[in-house]
Length: 311
Image (tube, rainbow, N blue to C red; front, top):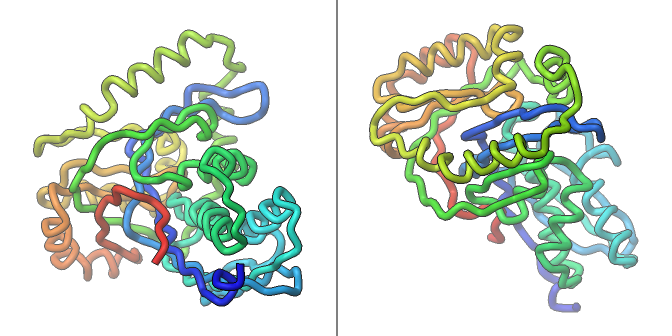
């Protein structure tokens, strides 16, 4: 434990995009039944962990817009893990924030999972993946995905995960207006009010949708340079209410060599896919000023085969 205590652990905590987001319906537990494909991208936050013996969870960050109190998912994650493990150690955490907040890229969920993984090592807990995933599901619906990351099918409310064997090499352009954020909870509520007028009872329908996504999900993403539409049910709500999202999707749709475009999660970040990272970089270089003039921050990313990693 002494060797671990003297070291500093640094973790790369990547964002995700949704390559499929289907809201099957409203569940009696208040959540929504989902069928999704989630993919890690290399826009990442970085977390540094160092043990302290005061028994305190101390979080600092270079992001002034983020709460560092008990409502932060990093702090919640650390407290949950300490309670589960019945230990007295504390930790000093520093978060370098690159993933925009309230963007539909699940930066908070990624940070929560990174905290579980980082402290499992720092505190020498030796918890297995199944236990970490179970804890992650308490912290949020997107959080379990990040324990293994890469590309996965996500069912239930997001906690039923099936790893996909794929190594897509697409390049990604992301657009987000830095002055706009979207509440995930509010978006689901609005979607539910419009499209889910009763609770789910048809379990056969749920399984058929899952089977269809298992059988055809990856086939639909093998674009072969042909444009297809990515399904994101939440886009039906957000695009009509949010001018920033509508304009971002329009700008992306007009890019040369764009294979497909969509909103990620509950938005407002939108993305376009290209055949490779070099094509995406050329498109961003050619359009960076236009995006900036329209009020958008922009990034080029690639897909990651793995999620959270130690540095």
